[in-house]
Image (cartoon, rainbow, N blue to C red; front, side, top):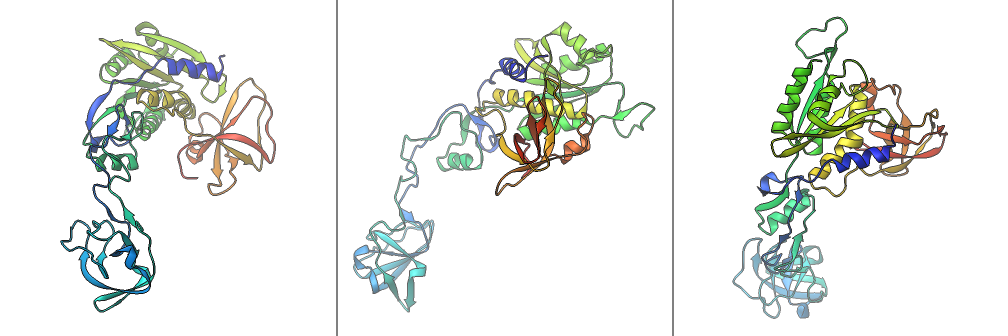
Length: 403
């Protein structure tokens, strides 16, 4: 067996970032910028009010000051009236500051008496005024290359009118399952047959990761059909994920076919679950396409994707942070295990998002216990040894569900 760290280094060394493309802003959510986005104009483009209130001259303000209201400034409208001595203009949030005014007093600090506004105190010059360019100036880097295009970043792009972006594209991932024992609805189960759950789970995991997915179907234990599925996958995809057929059995035909058509490394990793893993490349024309051969047990396939394929696919999409963050949590009931030379990734429930984190193990830790995997929202990482005693702590990988 090889160590977890060695396996990770090998997997990440087999992939590289996809070539950059230019894409419309509307299609770029979740992608990573491959070139800086610059501000071409000041943001905001004009001085405006930070709140609803009255635009005034600071020199005219004070306790009990009475100012004549000579107009109203709404967002999107430039008033054609200056604020003179002893005057005020009612103003809404985001509206341009009228000429002559140098401060805004919030509406809560005023009382209106007919055409007069009465102030409850003084304001300084610049109070509640957003100056032109106080967020970005022309030529500023609004977003740097490598930035992930989340909601705020997309808002920045829209603000600076960056409608075409240079980005790293989504990885197009093909997924197929293998096994004569696997059946899809509406076909009834025969003797010794089970439903194909792996493919659905892996496709969903890749969608959650931000990939474009291609369902390559359910493939029987037939070398020629496996070869056809693999060659079709690498022809149309940037990466291929397979489930099953990568262990040491006589019917593990995925292994045999990949040995013929690819440059693969077959690993037995010192972890539980997900010990067997195949990672390598298959050529398709001028392209070299990474292939991830995951184990067939359903929990093992998802854990293997999480630990190895997920960070590799994120690297291909330009992300600098490849893994989910780990947290330290207390195990009130303990997380016992036996020494076996492996790191154990235990399916747990993680709680305490607003305070100290706690984890509790779930019943059903076998690599076939998919219901327990569905109930888990984290993986506890237990080094080789006796595990964690009651009240002890361990590292935990949250799996994305709010916790």
